Image 1 (cartoon, helix red, strand yellow):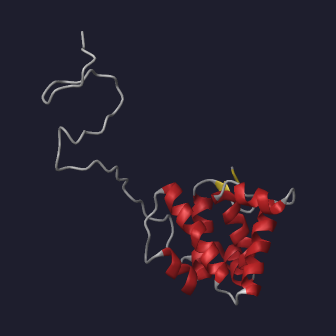
Image 2: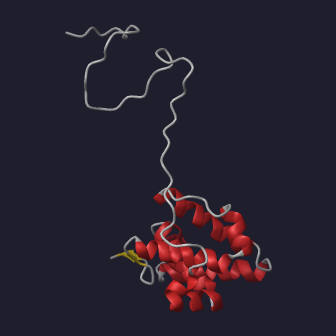
Image 3: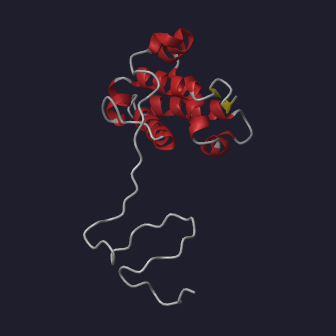
Length: 164
């Protein structure tokens, strides 16, 4: 029915049900790049008071909130390495505190913004209102609260580090 030779331009390929990207032979000026539509965050950056207990905890001890977020976003991988059997969020939070002490509050912000980028990548979220690194450098508490609320709104019990 179909020959084993490559298809000529204009010849129809067999229907398999599997989506196939166009080849350069058929569309020489187009490049196939899959794009996903970015979705907005479920809450705004400054909606911290929507979850007052988390807002207070993040303001006074951001390492705890970060530990919970990192545990979910990394699916426990980095936390298992750091914890060696302890509770994962404690290990990630402790690492956050260590970075804060050793580098005068700069490295922990760099470390935490990478988890925001991972979270955005996993859930195809917009990078708004500005770049992740700027948010974590200038408004770290607000960024952590927003990430916490996003995971909570997506069905995670963030305080336990797992999906409900």
